[in-house]
Image (cartoon, rainbow, N blue to C red; front, side, top):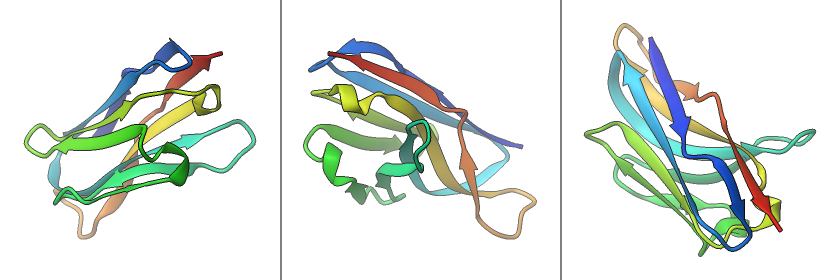
Length: 121
């Protein structure tokens, strides 16, 4: 059983900062790419940032220069440092990871339960 658990969401004023954390646990063999996604009500889930096992990153244009994704492979953690937050960043953020779990014959995509970020104007 593999789980991803996010933490760090909450309420912050515009211009403020938050750091999201995501911990992977369970029968994990290898974690490939990890990432953060977000989804507003009635809209499709969008990629916010991704990071490969080797540390290569990718960001959606709207967060470039404001958000930073990082990971700790030994601790099986991924982080999202969010600075200069805007009201339009108010959505539920989801952690995701490509994981090769013990007992499986292929890599599967796993998702966390989501954490709410609310930015007040």
